[in-house]
Length: 406
Image (cartoon, rainbow, N blue to C red):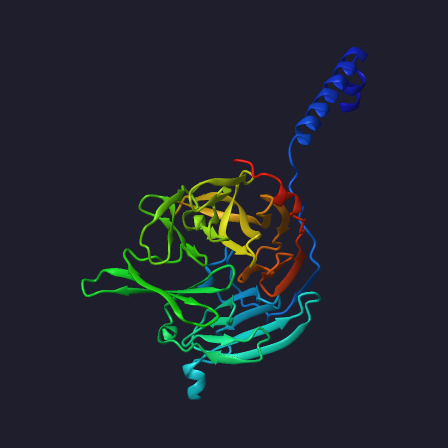
């Protein structure tokens, strides 16, 4: 029946259809040619399973750096570090006091960033079930349970952080992209049952306190720091704000995009520039001048994780694709993540230079980091670590060309 109908189409009609199809394809080619194609999903330089077998669980979006159980980072000299906390290594009824006091195991691995070969393994008992490791100019700052510790970049040496507040397990730690500045945020309740943040800002090389002050209402996880100040979300006015250390004078920088909530957390990639956004990535100065806006494809939004190269030129943003499904029994909408990508931007050219597909979706562990020079992206997906090459272009032509207004 189908073949008869095709045979019955007259020559004029066939000619008209062919002309119409040709016009459509020509028009589509013009539209496509006028758009700047996004980089294709890259293939890794290498991938390797480095962590033990996972226990079952499901988590599609990584938590904030202070609440994760595994992660990946580059030290200031480019060494690749993987860490993880295993809470099921000791039975709860163990009679050994050291095992009962420190029931979890912190694993630290030193990898060759060019091959993925594990060069060194370190294991130590810890109280906490989560961990965070930060690259600083003074070494690797490890927070997994009091007290905090400093490791050398090669993991060969270890020392306790010689500060009283470093023994506070609930203290929030932030490190600037350069690794030169550490900020400790202790959320304290006063005698009137009001909460405030007590901040201590330290030089990472000397561990000397540069600034110390209190602020109310307190800040929690929705902020980042540079070597000079803080950028945060003001949930009362729904704005992005910034302030220098110790000033208590917040200036409006921008307004969050979309309905991502805490995923709008701003990221300072230099002392005077930051990014934020939900369904768009916005780069702006701390004075409020918009430098770049990149709109994500429909259905995509930030998943709340951003990494910055030490020099601040490159940033990597985690973007998830999701569908909202309504649960008729619970009368609420649930977001189901269907895909995850990491988009890497060159902030010198204000362009996306690399897209990495996070496949399969993480079940438990998810993290990523940029090397100090921005030339490599490391991704932790459950047990596996993958390293990708980031295209790095010369900026000589940008230094001599006049800066265009946004």
